[in-house]
Every structure is written in structure tokens, then in C-alpha cells.
Image (cartoon, rainbow, N blue to C red; front, side, top):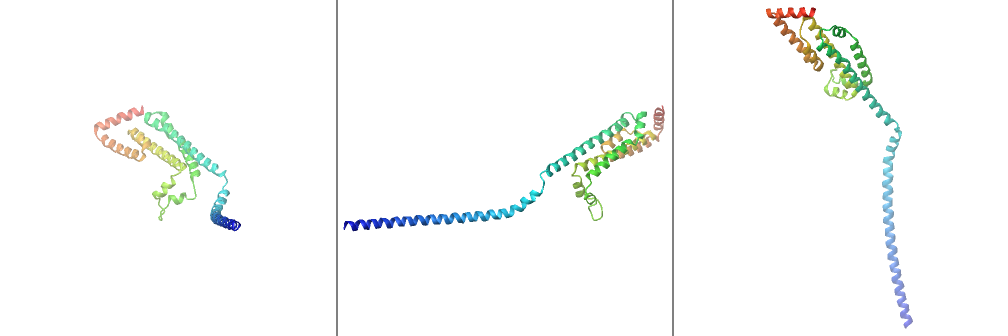
Length: 241
């Protein structure tokens, strides 16, 4: 009786142990399934990422790392050239304006103003900057409209380069100096005050030209009177001396 009881207890314990082991094995199996499912999803995601990123990596690998510093150095060199020529052009024209304003009747001023050397130098520098800044789309930006006329957006885009801005500055310096020389010669010929107009030609050339025209008209009107004629004769005699 006792042995049968022990046997039944042992069987019950064995059954319970087997049941617990089966539950544990079932839990482990579920965890394994979940783990493998998650691992499979991660592998699929990695495979998709590899398919997307691999072509980008190949494209980036075709760009030589040395080309980036070369491009940066090229831009820095262009900016340095533009800055140097910008300053040089300004320095070239300042002495001529100084002579015309502070020593208009000096022989040195007259000889300097008659010289064509500054225009040759400025023209050469301008041509060099034009060569450096020229691109295949320059003409398209200059004549952007269907009527082959300049448009403001195209000109604005064209002047986004330091080289183009420096070339435009040289363009202004050359034209302004030429206009100031014409005003100076006209003033010497007719005995008209031109210093204020020359200064305006340096800063605002169209205003300087207008100022000379107004000054010339007022001077001619004033000289029509007797005091004006006498003053004009006095000025002319002083200039000849």
C-alpha cells in the first residue's frame, strides 16, 4: 500500500516535472520564433538599405577626394585675383582725378590727362577678368528675353561672381575717367569751372556729366552780361599766363 502510494506520488511528480519542462520548452520555442522573426526583419531592412545606399556610395566613390580641395582652391584663387585687380584699378585712376581737381592748370596735369596709358592698362585688366569670368551661359544671361534684351534677373545672376563684379568695376572706372577727361578738356577750352563735376564723375558719372552741362549753360548765360565778359577776360588772361 505504501509502495503504491509512493509510486503514485512519484508518478505525479514526474508528470508535473514533465509538464513544467514542456511549458518551459514551449516558452523557449516561442522566444526563438520571435527572435528569428525580428532577426529576419532586420536582415530585410539591412538588405533594403544596402540596395539604396550602395549606389550612392558608388557615386560618391567616383568623386575623387582631391577634387574638392582643388575646387575650393580654384574659387579662392579667383576671388584673390578679382580683389587684387579691383584694388589695382582704383589705385590707377586716383592720381588723375587728384591732378585734375587740385592742379588743373599744371603742365604735369595736362600731359598726364593727354596720355592713353591708363586706358590701355585698364582695358587689358578688364579683358583678363572678362576671360576668367566668361562661361557658356554668359551671353544667355546677358540677353535673356525673347527680344534679345537684358533682363534684371539674368544680370543679377551673372554678377554673383567676384570676377564679374571686379570686371564691372573696371568698366566703370574706365568710362568714368574718360568722361572726366572730356569734362576737364571742355572746361579748359571754354574757361569753365569743372572741379566739382570731375569729383562727381568719379563718384556718380552721369550726375557729373549733367553737372558740367548745367555749369556750362549757367556760365554762358552769365558771360552774356558786361560783368561776366570782364570776368571771363580776366580768367582767360590768368590761364594764359
